[in-house]
Picture 1 (cartoon, protein in one colour):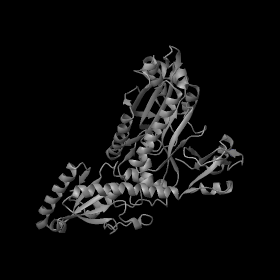
Picture 2: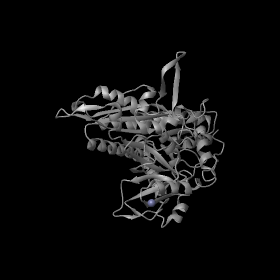
Picture 3: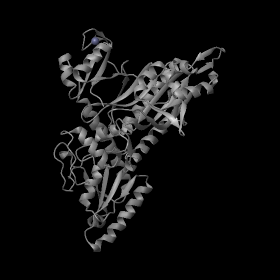
Picture 4: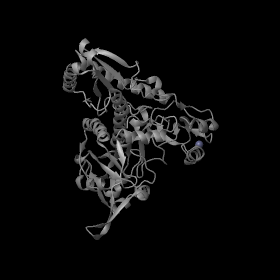
Length: 494
Ligand SMILES: [Zn+2]
């Protein structure tokens, strides 16, 4: 499997993506069209994503709970925009236990409604607020065009739902969680993201304001990687989430919701992957380092394996996610290709010479064969010299940890440099239509839906976000020339 060449990224990015997801055994197609099976290697990545996020949620005062998969149809109908937005994507259960149900049940596409219903029972007084609950689970949206991880009928995610006594507090929460997502994406995923506000057209159905982290993939298309919504009092009014304030006056609560899904796995793949395969950021990689013994002759094998086992135990004890590849039926060269394809950040080779000298060879996934990543992959099983170093066995755990930290840093720098070199500030509309073919346009926009629609019709690019960081002053809308208060990113998106 590892011997087959991947389609190069610059030849067919989409085909490269599909091949890599399956060959690296991250996910597979399910018998139901549009559904995915997340395989153990992909799930291990998701578990690391979950842990990194969950830690941040708890540090910011949130707790986890679990709400039902089924939602009464009438609940969705209570919030007009919400039901309009989600209706085309709903899976509905009409029969249960062989009987036609009195009321159809929706398989949750998101849980604002059922959680809003429960909050109305739990919240009576200002003393009950804020409520800061997150749920890890799965949801179903009946999508027509699907891609593994990026868009599937069922996907895994977390959804946070909070209720507050004031608008100010709810708005702060919305931005706090956007910051949490950005911090996670940048520092764990090494995925540079831009924080911003969605346009009215692109916002979540039922929200007053949607915020997003947007990332640029290796083909320059944008990926919405996490969203945080300020829901105003829309769901509070629909579900009677009311409380008595300090003056004993009945008030509607202010709510937020925020989510990040298995889609982020797609972000990692498409941000860092190269023509050899996956490149995982060390902080999220299921396997951070793989040890490959180099066995040359029977006489030395025992000594090599003894060192290998000792090194393995030391690294494991130091908390490094290390794997020993002691397969004997395949060559070291095959193993090199295999683990490179699977994106393991660091390879540790140990052979007879290393035993003699008290060293090991470290080969970095991010720089090995760096010269080849843009062209034809080398399949000779010999790593390039670049990125390979020999380090003493004594103090190896510290050296490995340091190298992993450096790889993490390099990946973020590389991705940031790539993104920044593909963001353009077109001088006029004609230039905008060109730059969005292979990059993002960062332009003044009057915020009218007409101008947004024209760009989409002419180029397929949509507004990705109005970034929170804005230049001073005003400008002229790149489409219509009218006064514009904000700059926006236009890009083709997944
Ligand atoms: Zn305009």
